[in-house]
Image (tube, rainbow, N blue to C red; front, side):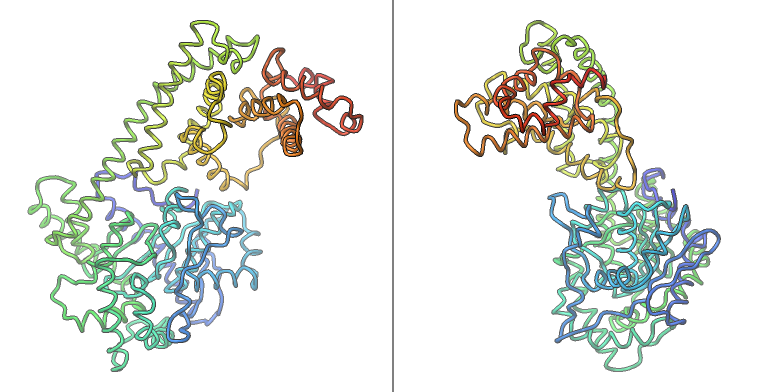
Amino acid sequence: MGLYLDYDSCTPQFTTGQETASFLCSCGILDQSWNEIHDVYTKNVGTFLLKSHEGVLYVAFSVHYMEARDGRDEECDLQIADTVLYPSLKGDDGQQALVHKGAFNRFRYFLNNTDLNARLQGLQEQVIVFVGHSIGGAVATLATIWFLEKRMKNPSPFCITFGSPLVGDVRLGEAIARQDWCGRFCHVVSQHDIVPRMLLAPIESIAEPLNVLLPHWRSTMGIESATVSDLPIQKASKALLKKVLECTESPGSPYIPSGIYMFCSMNGVACIDASEAVLKMLHYTMLSDQGWSFDRIAGACISEHTGYGEFLEDIAEDMTKYLQNAKKIASVVQNSSFEMGIALELEAIGIGSQNNRALTVLRKAGEMKKEQDTNIDKLNFQLSERQSNMAQLEWYKLCCSDLGYYDAFKEKFNKRDIDANLIIGKLASFWDEIVEMVDKHQLPSDFQSQNKWINAGNAHRKLVEPLEIANYYQKGGNSGNYLSAGVRPHRHEVLEKWLNDKNQTRTGRERRPRTKFASLTEDSCFWAHVEEALKTLQHQVLNATQIESLEKFEDYLGNMIENRSISAEIFLEGSTFIKWWQQYRELRHQSQQWQARSPLFNFMDSRGWETVGI
């Protein structure tokens, strides 16, 4: 369980930004998180600090800001996420995510050179909140992802950062969204704090002013109301602001926000989770609607980075101000609760409800979410119909108990085989549409990680794909191996990938070994492997490559039999598998060494499936 911010359970649309913010501000978790961060700074811990408060364990990171080297801040570069620490951090294209080099190096240092890992491993059933400020917030983010990956025996963690720089690229955002982890992260961003925005600018373009500002930040960490009076600091802050504003308006940086962003201003607070909307708000919120001069904004960009404690002290008053303004805004925006919700958010985060560009951004994000919710409702209804089709195929499978449903369908003796073929077409169209909608971002980003759809897709693939393989080889398999590129239907590849991605995050769960064979073979491509092995045996003389492929297939079968992940119907007399086995045994029977060492030979000759059972 643990802490989690669930937008989908909240209505009406776009009041969720204030509801989430109000919850976080009122429950005390933000204040306590900042208190822990302040303790790390004032006690000069140097690494991290663990402290329990009211049943919650806070893990606060102490990290000095990034070191500038050779005229540029190399530690702001992106690097490939470690596949050992972060195996599931891949984008929708299958490529590994890129993460903040400086934050990653510091987190890896904590894992390898401190007792952080051991202390967290020793905890049981305790809610953990990773917290951090500035670069420490980026480290806290990576620590939270690592903890989620490890699936330790604790409630899922929560992460709160203050003024954290961006952590990763678009692939990191896709991975977090796909795993449904967005609600585990809350990034608190003050209206003018430059640090959460500065990595949207090329590192080379901000290196010079950043080199001036880093010592100032390091010296003022943990000090509230740090003023910006030194002339070089003022000059550097203006230069940094100018460059960042240019880049936040039309960002070309590889860094992308992920998780929930809590924007705060003197008017109130609001939470936004749509990545594209967050990007735009990072720009618009800096352009204060209160008539501030450029110089004043530049000063606030630096001072607000260390001023989150003051903000939290005033938050109750700010929320009261926000609520007092709600009626005023409601009287102006009367056309819908949707538009009113957007206006309230813009007022709360200091942009103002009259900013048409910001209105358009949030309106577009809201409409996209509404479309995705509508599509989900439609698919839920259609899924119930398709489950009826699946039940029909299950019945068809039972009716083919003499030969097995794969071979019965391949022969197509009677009308029920034709009817089954029509059902397969309906199911294929349904899942093709879903895959296309995911590709077009017409469904929530975590759709493919939801157990309901993963399980439905896996059931479809295991029951239906063998019949599609039967169709393919019944027609001659003229396009070559079913498993070769471009032959296997894309939907099955995608559904299998969804399952594999989900299984990477289930590593902490032990699965009981099977005592009986599966009702459906786990590998939905099993029959394609059989057909190809049978085709190989048709050669009068086998070369070394063909013999090696048959031996690999034998090992593959042995593993499936040992794991009971295969259906017992493959052993029915007359099945394609039995035909392969008879020919393969004939090929190898003269080898006494093979007979002595082959688990498959021993199992088949003793008719081992009869003792295991179905």
